[in-house]
Structures are given as structure tokens and as C-alpha cells.
Image 1 (cartoon, helix red, strand yellow):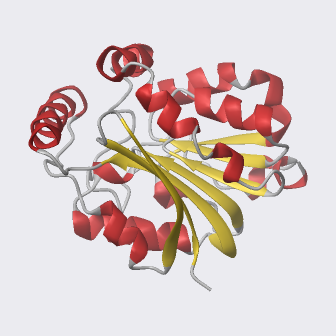
Image 2 (image 1 turned 180 degrees about the horizontal axis):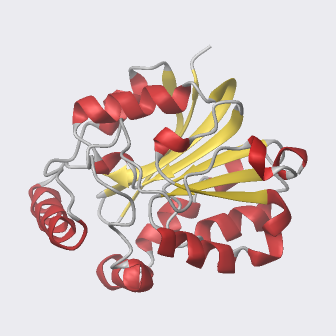
Length: 232
């Protein structure tokens, strides 16, 4: 892809200890390095195949060409699936260097069209406008004021007619609340996460003019995946 030919044209946070202005962590990178080697195993242990199915459900809605931003891409298995389904160029951002190492390996056959950035939403290349976004289990890392800043920052990097795929937890039942409490407690211990309450990410996305085109629930309606587009 042309806009990956010169990596110097895209600012990268690889190798730095970045304090991200929009990030509720307000801490250095790599806090998820500790669990990166077992992250996918832990997800499968708790959720079976539900979380993977949720994240893949709306991938076909993304543009098959153009530029796609993956925010908080994790171990990279989803990026590999997206590369198989489309010829789009991808910017992959994650705050964990070990997650990025895993993602590089999983997408090695598509290295000519995926660019990795070690950072957070603060590292999104300002000179690129994206046709599509994948942000799975990313907004739940923030409290509501920080989440609003993150969404606004991402929106500035998206084209007017873009497709957003967002998958995250919801809190509609008592057992949802209890499981969320346990998960936030776990990530507070292993990754220093300060957030303790799931933000109202659905309302946050709607407040910036995004409309839900399609939606699907998974795992007892604890996980919601939505395909959003700009209103009008």
C-alpha cells in the first residue's frame, strides 16, 4: 500500500514510554505485557468462542479497500482475519509491545499492507483519514470523560462516510455487573487499570453523530457488537 511505503511518514511510538493525554491510565506503555502471552487463552477460558465470534461478526461490513484503523488490536488474530477478507491497508495500534510482537507474527504474510504503532489513540497518524475503524474492548478502559475525549480524537481521523466496528461489554443484568466487577479487579492487579465502572460507550458513540446500522449480542447479551456509520 502506498501510504506504508515510507514508515517515516507515519509517527510511531515504538520503543518509547509515552504518557497518553486521552488515556485514563496516565501511565507508561506495556502494562499489558504481563498477560500478553496468555491473553487469548484467558479469553477462551472465560468466554469460550463468544468473544472471538463477536469481534468477527461485522468484519464483512468494513470497506474491502482503503485504510482501516485497528485500535487496541491485541494479539493480532483479528487483523489476520481482516487481511484475509479484504485488501485494505491497516494501521494497527496497541499499547503492549508483546501484543504487537504477536500480531506481527500472525500477520507476517500480509506485512506489505499493515503498519504497527506501539501506542494508544494519542498515536493515531494525524495526516491519515481512515475509511474504517475496529475498536474492540477498548472503550471499556476509560472513565466517561476520558472516553469522550478518545472518541472525539478517533473521529477526527475518520472520513465523513466511514464504518466503525465496536465490540464491548454491556451492563444490563445483575450477573453482568458482578462479572464486570471481577474483571476490572483482575486487570487492576495485573495491568494497573484504574477504571472500575464500565462507561456508557453506546451513548458516547451516539453523541458524536454515529448511528447503529447493525447490532448483535453474544454471551447472554453481555457482549454487544455494533456496526456504526455517520448520520447523514
